[in-house]
Length: 416
Picture: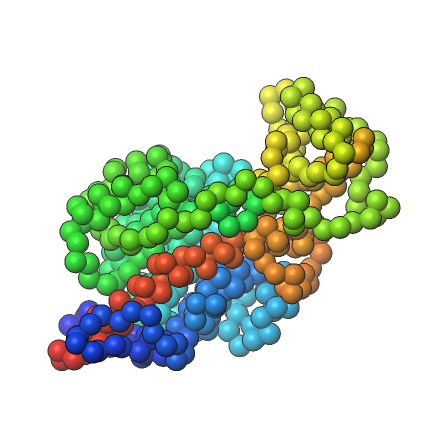
């Protein structure tokens, strides 16, 4: 009875998006779009999850983040934010403030799960915000969204010896969600190395056994998985899983950094002084310095990114050896900010990467205005998701699940 009640509550949401091809009792396939599916976007930040979902027919009708600065960036592009974006601590949001939606997305803070952070685990000061999300879903009861999308860094899998990942899946299972999980790297869509774990939860009944689902998840190719993820699944076969038959994602990019670089005049003050450049050259190990010197000897200008790292021997400037960017981070700490080298024609220049370059690496079009300056803008993009990754997930996972949910809902309603 509870399942039927939940399905009836959500049928209207699906009706707004898909029409049912009932001819010969067939399941629906590609349908005419007649309206959007609805989304509650938690930890919405600057709105890049929304940007990835909207082209596939999804409509964000509720968004939340604790950061007023991120909301400032969001509303500069999404003019309707005043009607649905709530700036508040997730633990202080009343469930009555949240409209009924088809999907809830949760890109909860990664600081306590990341190797670049503090590894305090999911009960740490920041990443514990996940439990605020779970509190809301629990309070919504049968009206909770039938689909959830949770995203975080690979450290989520091994934080607290893997117990944090298990705890999140267990919590979702207790609320009626079976889970599938995969890894997708932004490098398959943009010139940025950025691997992320994506977990999708559904309340749909599965036609496969739990054993079949775990086997299929464990059988996924490296393009959608990792040894650590497979170990996490193997250690948690007792949890409730389901399986999405995903296609192979695009191949990894081998270059492209140069194509996203903003043209900045040599006289621009954002380029570092000769003294600052020399200081960073002296921070490089012999092999990294050689990379830069070889770059300078080329007849054309090429670009490389680097981070400042704290090592046993002191602070180091570590340079990539390809036309790609490393993973964008929050840029609040010294190791989070990413820097740029322009080398060639006998010269070397250095500067910090710009917010627009960060945006382009996240797949954000130049039409997106950058309403805040400096570190705040870099943090907004560094904390966000890669837009084409979300678009791919919507196309190959969320929309097919929504279509299936509609089919199941109509079947339940027809059978009374």
